[in-house]
Image (cartoon, rainbow over all chains, first blue to last red; front, side, top):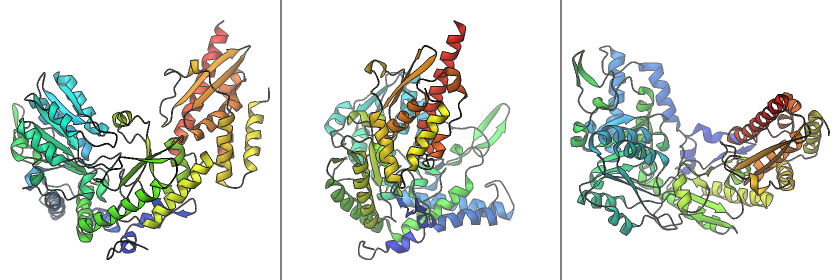
Length: 410
Length: 143
């Protein structure tokens, strides 16, 4: 297998049981990593070990199993803290994923801080989960939602963004890397400009966290949310980082067990950070297994994975550009390993069906970014997204598969 | 007009002539291309079938005791599926459409290929056909 020097992609592939699968009699080519990544054996083992050895409810139990489960759960919090460069574990709140992280901020911080006439800024690149919670908040509070425009390549128009900023701007919430196009936004610049007018900034790190080095202190963002399942961890777990002073001032999101200090019928005192925001028995098993996923990434090295993925991105981009009638959307320099494209006169769904016939999994449609598709004046794209375990040979299969599909469809 | 069951059998026999999935899909796409164009008048938001990744329009009319369907889609495979459904059900009596079991989709050997989201589109189209037939049936018995 060809690969970047020193990067043993075959060894990495061998750690993912699902990659041994055949689809329609052909080895699976999994290029839907931006939707969710596959899971290495260490993550699967961590789940099995948790349920086989130390399943217990955390934090309250005084028995050994509860202590072991609590220690494992909190060890993931420390691993997440280190992974995104947060100052303390008190600022790491476990969620179900990015969507819940954004909703937590919209409900808790948003309901307490957004007033009538206030302005919230998002970008044209946003996933529905970074649009709808703010629309709901704006509608409830009589606030105004403003949208940063993009150019034809899917790049944010910074000059237009600066024009939107004003003293009424209370929040800016933007995606770090576009799930639909892979385009990386200049978030540091966006954050600094927002802070200059006193606005709080939320970063949607769903796509970026697996690919880019994240340091929330260097970024100086106020909130940062990501999902575990996009970085080789199980589904149903993610994290929200928030600056301590903001989190402390925020009211709880959900009420229940875990998030309280004392409950009386005449009043309740809330628990300290981060537990104030973690009501109820959390998703312990998946959270514990997320640590194995972070260790898996750290073990290979993010820098090494990124170099490999960028090789794939460059190779794939060159190959796809050579197919007549195919146009890559978001064909810019600053990208994560996502190639989104349209084929002239062909509906993405047709391409997706015929690629699936050949054992190739891609995503087609609007990728939960309908407004972005409207901005680009298309109904959808076909998206191939690469992970640590993908190869150039698989890209060759995609290219051959596309030729075949186009021949059938034309 | 041939019976619904006979038309389904006819389609199954046609597909059995093809050995590879490529040929089956080429034929399916061909059926879509041969589907008579829907009157632009009926390509409305109201006639759009929800829940499909592609845009699908379906319109029905009632004439002399029979229901006539028109359909279109911007995706070729879905249009082929719509073409098959129109061929099976258009021109049939409402009661026959409502009561007919749909077997040909399983029998053309493409079920696994049309699974999940695609078959959601298929199921949505089929549901619309049956609902329309039911509506025409109750309208005609009321008069």
